[in-house]
Amino acid sequence: MTLFDSLAVPRPSHASPEALATSRRTPRATGLSDAFTTRVDERVLDVFARARRPDDPLELRDLWLGRVEHELGQQSYHTALAETWRGSRPLRTVEPEQVLSSRATVRFVKELFNWYFRDDLYGGLRNQAQYILSGGAVDEERWGLPHSLKECIRFALDRDWYGYSDSRGRYPAREAIAAYESARLAGVRYLPEHVAMTMGGTFAVSTIADFVLHGVSPATAPALCAVPNYPPLVETIARRHGVQLVPLDSAHGRTDIEPLIAALTPDTPLVLLQTVGNPTGAAVTEEGLRRLVRAASPSTVIVLDECHEWLGEYEERCAERAAPNVVRVSSLSKTWSAPGLKAGWFLADPAFIAEYYEYASSSFGGPPSFFYTIVEVLARMERWLITGLTEPGTGELKEFEASYGLDLETLRHAFRTYRTERLRRVSDLTALRDAATVRLADTPARVLRPHFSINTAVELPGWDDSYHCFRDVLRETGVSLFPGLLTFCFSGAVMRITTARPWQDLAPALDRLDAYLRGAA
Image 1 (cartoon, rainbow, N blue to C red):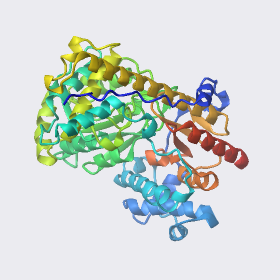
Image 2 (image 1 turned 120 degrees about the vertical axis):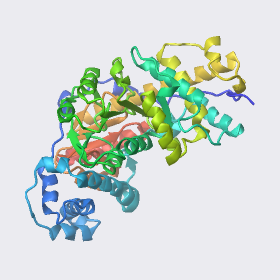
Image 3 (image 1 turned 135 degrees about the vertical axis):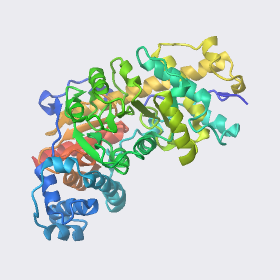
Image 4 (image 1 turned 180 degrees about the vertical axis):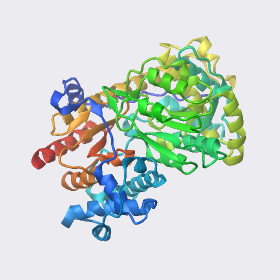
């Protein structure tokens, strides 16, 4: 029984000639936006002003949806919610800072996020959705796990590797992650003691928040969460401690981190920051990260969500990412298109990891041992890719345990397969993203050119509410877009489009969107 004893064939390229040709075109300049800003607009303030209990997130959700249903008129789907809105009136004056510092705001957005997926898109409105561009994930059937990694799952099954394990993860897998992450950071050498394996990115942030905040006094300064952001991540922090939302603008693919630095206090317990924004695709600069780390108190834990750092040319990552108070979170969800595996890792100071071991062993035991081999293999092969290795040698073969039964030729074939699939995947998905940007720039919309990841932010004219925009576009075109409100974009009709879909689905969806926007204009 050996690893890779079934010789894998690389997935074929799924690049459409039309998509490739479109991606090479220069987008219409007037259809592009260089800057992204988010603010708390009057529609947000009005909902908080009308709530009888502005600390009740469910009432806030129902008022928001009720206003949308009221404005939809005869197209309303939830008439009882429309009546709720019509029965409300302004009761107070609300300032933007109150919204950004309210516990109810985080839960309200998360409840609206739940409603969108559970009750609308995959609930009562499912039959309307012919083209779903709102999922936030890659089409796994075309650009899923490389075959070499699938072999690791088969191998683990055959070896019956699904028993108890170290709560931080199996040592060889952690050693492979440490070597891979060391290759990504300038002048940093990680050891297995810096690594804890987890059940995906959201779970990692949840456990880190629980571990860091469980003993923090409620009187301590709030945790800081940069927005836009992913609602489950922010909610998992808000459950443990007070949260201050900090809107970050971006321009020319770079996120301005200054508001987050300005919001720091000496007793800020935790900071959550996505190094590449969702849905903007804009990145925090390494100089910005240096300034954040140096400005924060040593007792402030800075959690960097690095899951969207792909499909782009990243500058050399700074050594400050490995500072003692920084925790770096990665997962297989985006870069390897495997959100359902719920596998990932985070890196932190060995003292932090040592304490976390006791927390993990008492709280959930440990991550699934079934996936240790796949994480080990991908970490080793990714390191070889980013260091420019073209073919493994005897040194690389020795990185694997003898019990895997590998020989040099088998390993070389597996890596060639992995390398081919990974490069094809990056090329295909980048072309789709660029082609979608070109097509969207030809419409009456304004598209923010993404520099990373698979999401594109688009501002549609004619709406001042992204959820209302979602409902209208879905009804009239059969195309589902993701409302920016669900990523804490509190103004306008900023919509997120996931471009990692087959061109035969993406192109007609963009055709329908274009025709509808032109007709509406």
